Length: 146
Ligand SMILES: [Zn+2]
Image (cartoon, rainbow, N blue to C red):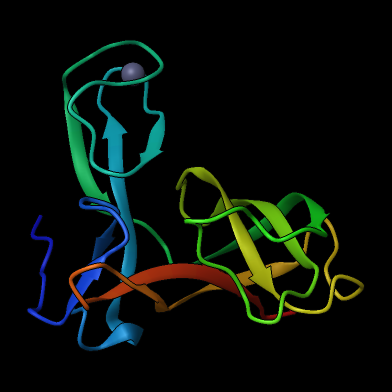
């Protein structure tokens, strides 16, 4: 699995996104599936967090899923974390990615009153911040699709 990098953009963390960083709509979350216990993990791993097996397959995950649970983040995260300016409360959800993907935590870009358990969401990658080397850092969030 390749992890393309452009000179002007980098992923928020290596091994978590696949696709062309210059084309944000092409990006998918990536990770590992354990061939021993079948658990899926966000981000490329070399050892399973569940059973310690080193027999893992790397894959791109579905770009949509369902909200398992959520809370409303009412305070901005402390620096150096990137966040909205000005800060507005946002849903922070556990999302079950489709097709057997992992359950991941992510901000969901919507009115906190619009989200619910079972809401359908889809991946939305964008520029989260600019790093110390003036590179755009590509991050992800989800948007409501129903
Ligand atoms: Zn395992």
